[in-house]
Length: 438
Ligand code: PXG
Image (cartoon, rainbow, N blue to C red; front, side, top):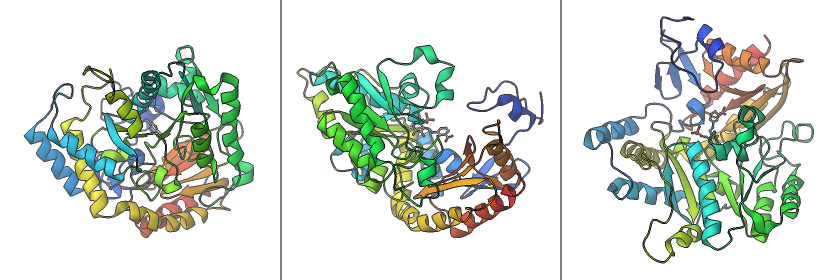
């Protein structure tokens, strides 16, 4: 199988139909600003920030320079029992933009590691404070929390679970998802209907007794499942129920963090503060793999108040706070602040909203939804072939010079925060033309 003059067989591609891809590869070789470039020099407008991560746009000179300089200065520093100064500095920078009361951060290398780390911190915290019975975890249908065993267990994407179904971690329940297509189709911003879906948490807690539950984990806006919005008041109600029963609330902000919703985190955009925030992607604008778990002071303090001076948490990665990631993160955070990119995302959100909603009424479009610079256009599935229309759009848009993301038949958009009005107009007009060809 050699569709290109590349040796295609050795690389087992993630979350991709290898056989289909290798017959007809979609390759990108270079990136700058809002665009990718194919090996044959075609320009492709990036409407998904790579994979929801390149929030500062591609190839920002300040970030490139910082990574280059760090590679020359020090390649690696062991993170156990040793450290490098920049790791402390970047932690301090990051906790300046987290919600009040969340002032500590544990570094990982990906969103999946952040989620599994957060779940482990939640379990260990309950034990440390003498609540060892609190072992149950609650996720949500259609949730995506990465691909570690913890993440797929609390996650709610059936395809990501079924090949591994006998090895989920035990003691997990799921809230219902919040995608009420009939009631909420074509909502702008947060939908009106569905706050009562949060009350299902009380039912789950009644079943197991709250004293057995450690934590609830949700994405404030579900990304991978197709950009599913929290109904108005929903997240606040989850917070209230968790507070009532002394249960930790974890927001998985791997996508929603770092400006995506027009604020630092979804927690601030929606005015609801969780106990733990997981992050990755936009942390370094996708330049170097890095993840983070931000925790409330009470959680950190619980571990630090142990008598003696032994290791407080038996967890960590060789590459936690890797010097290259730290340098990339520091430079990225400076770019976000200096260029006011989160504010810019908030300012561009209405333009983005109007542009996406102008596709209402085009062929096959059954919903448009958006918040900040995160949006989706849902298409009706071809009878008996769910996902076929979505994949057709991935190919057709790429051929037409546009990169988008699909989940099933939902087209997802999360442009770099440097997006200008002309970019979203170009994307929407390409989509309008292609929708008529399906
Ligand atoms: N949590 C959330 C909310 C995510 O969106 C992860 C955890 C895992 O991150 P890592 O870095 O381990 O991949 C993610 C990742 C898509 C898509 O199709 C989304 C992600 C990854 C791959 C594809 O929307 N998000």
